[in-house]
Amino acid sequence: MSGNRYPAFGVLLVDDEPSFLRSFSIVLERNAGINHIYTCQDSRQVMDMLSREPVGLVLLDLTMPHLSGTDLLQQIVEKYPEITVIVLSGLNQLETAVNCIRLGAHDYFVKTTEENRIIEGIRRAIRIQEIHQENQEIRRRLLTDTLEDPEAFAGIITQDKAMRSVFQYLESIKASTQPVLICGESGVGKELIAQAVHRLSRRRGPLVSVNVAGLDDNIFADALFGHRRGAFTGADNTRAGYIEEAANGTLFLDEIGDLSLASQVKLLRLLQEGEYYPLGSDRPKRIQARIILATHQDLAKKQQAGEFRKDLYYRIRIHQVDIPPLRRRPGDIALLLDHFLEEAAGELGKNKPAIPRELPVLLMTYGFPGNVRELRALAFEAMSRHRSHVLSMDVFKRLLDSPLVEQEEIPETASGRMLFHPEHSLPTLQEANDMLVREAMKRAQGNQSIASRMLGISQPALSKRLKKSQGEQE
Image 1: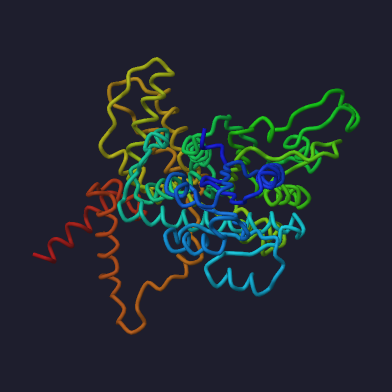
Image 2: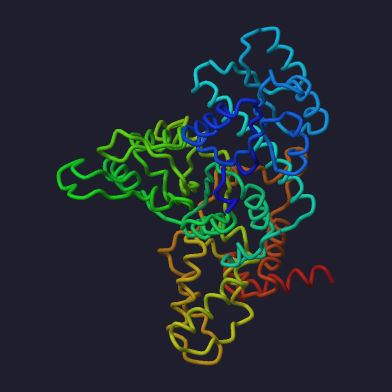
């Protein structure tokens, strides 16, 4: 399937020597993993091929019969400016190279130049072309506000706009082979996002998930890369690592913020070179899986503190998505509660109860430090205690009343924000009191019991304040 071809767009080799086309195609696949290759021996056929095939990069010889590489370069740049052209020539002449760049070539290499240098230049060109295509796709999706493959996200219950933006971004990078970094607090559903990315990529292979938290360097290397028989004491048989198990699929590495610095070096090399060595082997293997990474930690802070490598940090954040916590998605609480209650009812063999109208409003006032995972646990506990037609709110009220529960920590930016403009006069205590009451009633959707909980006063005291305020207004 096309989802396992690299890159997503085709690479066209144009040269009048069949032996070079064959040998260089092998080099590209073996040393760079490039297997989406077209070849053309007759330069007169190139423009027709570009009209028919999804080519994004052309590797062009200069000295050819019929139509020269220079003339062909001008035609490609004029008719297909979005296609990148790299000249691979036998001529080691500065004037020729400068002229090709002036005509629109992305780069110029001499065929006799060191092979690794040419491969690295082609990799850079592919990456730039991928970024260009991804930016165009992101712009198109955001402008049209569309999801072309909503089924890929069917397992994620949400109606939040921020989550929809995440989905649109993931759709726009589905063809990319670059790693995806998923950030978010514990319990927000990072593994569900990884599953969606895997489904979007349409890869033949499986999704292999590995939690790397707590793995020391040796175990990390053995788990990912595998080992040969006799690689170390106890290695009685050859064992494939998770990378090989995920071939033609996706490898999901969860909690990468906990990796040791030594393991980070190994991961960086894997991502940069696209190859790895099983323990005890001196022959490298190419990675055939896309890598997704996830963490609940702030990698920028860990990098600044010297606990996370800077080069790895910038390498893995090429494609990064931040999943908002549940407290910033209040509109999803009622949807998720309903879904989890139905799930719990099915597992426990009970009928799904009616949900009190004020329960979702009450839950919106809670910080949910455990996010979606915590809400699911609450729903299952409430369902296990359920006996009547209407769901009891006791489980939820006990949680909100518990002094042991740590509510959401207020970020420094929020705690230090300017509540009142220095050029404006301060409100009186009475005015500030009225403002707080009005805001609490607004957030509680008119429910005095819930609003009083938010304000830290009793419901009768709030009722008295409301009556007094209404009397003053009359």
